[in-house]
Length: 508
Image (cartoon, rainbow, N blue to C red):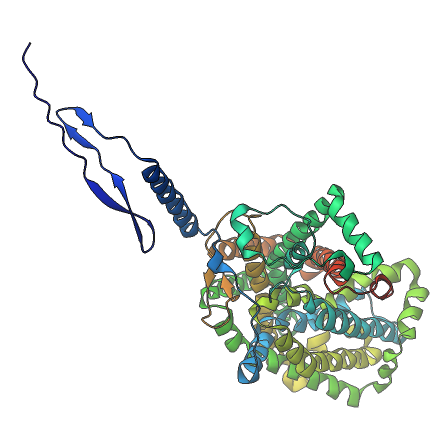
């Protein structure tokens, strides 16, 4: 047998990178004539290799869109010019939805020409809904239930999880969570008992999680229904200008506008808000001007609707049918759920300024003016905006109605992007691409996959339902559920986070 000369060579030590900036050494492996030579690896080297692998895994996770400690963002505070710029942009993004509600609220309530008493009763319901639900409940109370500046029902659930042990967190998520659970002695006895019940009840914790996730699904459903409802409602105004136009032409025009709306989403919330804001401002200004015109020329006595007793008398007078008509009144504040969900894209103070200084006054004048016209000409209930517009302003109102309806969809689309980013971050949704569209506001986001799916779903919904009356019923269900979940989550936050008395929370 021939002698085989085997030459042993010392393995080379080559540097490998375990973390950015840190180098560790590991052994190399030499191959010579099919024989593998290696030396025993020391414990220190094994640890270095393990660290190298773990760091690599973390890097891969980060590249895949998972969290790392640098993702933690504190609540941003805006002042001065930047605050007013955000308030201006928020008009273009948030209030398009609630700003186009006058297109179909009265037609959603009445199915036949109403009496003057009924017009005043429904107007009273609308006015107090805007004052109590939108202004007091959402703008002044619920917007405070933010999680480091982010809004929405699921964000409120995340806020609760920082003040109570109601969820088991992903290990990778723990560095991102700023726990602020109060000491037992810092809570009122009643609040302490409520927290104990929540933390020790598996059923309660599961129910909270289900409410948070279900609310997100409802907002996503809104993201499909709102564009179809608002744009179709505006385009149907063509029936007033061109009575002979077919329903197919209306639906086709609506679908084309919807596709265009989703195509421009990659420009980002800030740019779209800057462009859309003048449209909404002019639209609301026109509606307010029409309202003043109708008050001067028709029945100014409808101001009696500010008496809430008129609303109660309407409900008593019509019994069960009156309660059913509340579904149409609910359309007056559709978009309020997006107001909370879009909080992260702007700020609480920006939203409060834009609502109180422009949107609320314009909407109140709009509905009062429509009621003044309907009290004299009740047959105009089907198209309240276009029939109540001054004769020379019909085409102008039609153009801005379509533009405002396009903008109206932006509120819920932006809200959908916000909520998807939140549930992706908390591992309740598969990891998908989320793009930041602003260098100054870190919660202005764009989610490409969601945008494509919303576009497809909205076009299909429009083609299937073909009119706003059918859409309004499904639309109203989504709004009802989201506002209910927002109320429950915020009530719990008032007890566990704000530490308010249970009596103060329960009485309103």
